[in-house]
Length: 166
Image 1 (cartoon, helix red, strand yellow):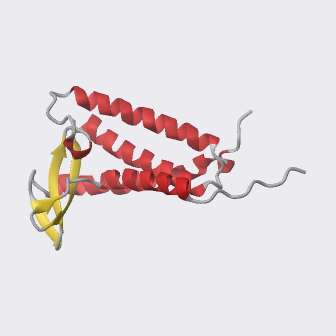
Image 2: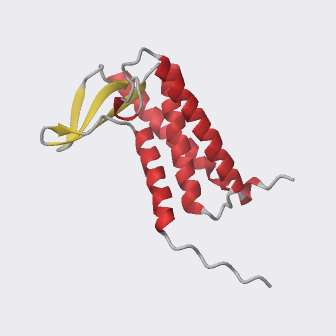
Image 3: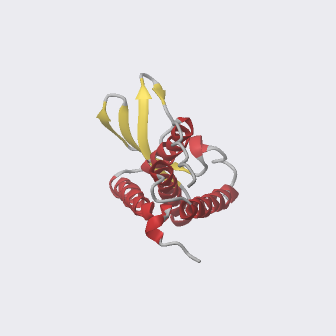
């Protein structure tokens, strides 16, 4: 017997759509208005910088000849399926976990689209202090990291007391 969607964590899938629209929109703007390697300073310590990432976080496996594109695409699909099942099994009232899962799914789908459509992930956020630059990243990466941080945070929060059985 199926559960009504509104009673499950799938109620939060709208957040996946928001993350996708914002992420893919920002990447489209970069692709339309920036040359590869172009940098524009926004604030001290923050640039927009068009970079292509053929690997994973921190360009992990970026120089491995192309097989990694399909490997990371498979991982993204697997994670999205797993988290969607977890959202279906969760109650809609479990907000923190469902929001975290939706952020991760949205970010994973944004980067998956890039991998499949372009063959690389479009990165554009360059955070730096002095001469030290953090790895260039995008809004999908940010959503994934925030989602992961929310899962960790939820693990530290006190659990509500179980209701007494009548």
